[in-house]
Image (tube, rainbow, N blue to C red; front, top):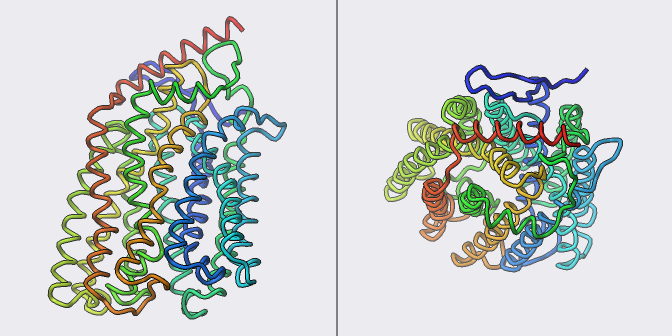
Length: 492
């Protein structure tokens, strides 16, 4: 018996296909897998330095090159996605293949090949292999939401569950890595990196299994056909056509790329080390504060999901950007006041100051949930818009074009981070917990962790003003898609 069902919405008259709650939760575990590897690869700069003897500035160049390669592989997956049809399904095969390739690459990068005298060439090769696997998994994962359900009442819940894993998994990884493993191994040592690698792969494996179980009922050939009776082969011009004529996708690219470059920079381990290990002065305490704030802010994932159900994904994104701008400005002001008073490290020792920092961290993380949740649903909306516009159901085309531009722009994130710390004196070594708090460290950290995101949010607000894909628009789109599919079925 199928686990999905048809659902007639009494308000708008559109017949939607929906999913069971357990299926939604399982499919959301794709973000659990992605964040395990995202956290792990964030330590790549330390692996390059400790395990392969590569200088700081060179690491930045390597990370930029590999992310550009990552961007190129994304649209290529669209062709693979279109052709893979096995008795084990389409998306499950791609997800498992991606996980296995990523696992092999990271085990070599952080463990088996590290510290064996290999240099820059080996590191680049391993990173490229990792990117191939990541592309297979991540690009396939981006299509799961639109494949699982098109019910506007369910899609925000899908987004909320994905957000929980996006924030919850890094929270767990941070706790284990920085409060358990790092004290045990004495810093960013080879043993520490190897242990984090094994732990990340184990958690990710659980996620892969759950995703495959959740998507099984929808992973069938009939769910990958378009709104025309004729099956058409995908061509490169299809991607160019999408980029040229899909206005919501253009706006989403501008929004996503600007946000992603800020996220890429801020999430680099060298930047978080400067914030937590130098400005605050206690990596363990700072991690616990951030983790506590993230745990509470997960509630905002479901609050923002309620906004998305009522107002639509686009308006949820806009609301989230305004909230993030306000909370971040307050955080910056708070840190500057502490710095000018010589008190930044009291965040880890003085309870009233610690509490204020905790509340501000909660506010900044919580408001980001609106953006993250809105973005998850908006990607599915953009895929449906393209299906209605072009008559083909090839979600990998939309996600491939989006990721190509997004990653090409954000590929400089690693280079920005490493070049920035080089400018303040870290040319041959990486920032370490306990290093002196210099003016360069403080102002550079604030600029990278908070300044770049502010620029990204402003760009997003401008882009959303040019995008017409509100809640009412999506109702009409779903009606037209249903009519076209019915007509195609009759003529088949």
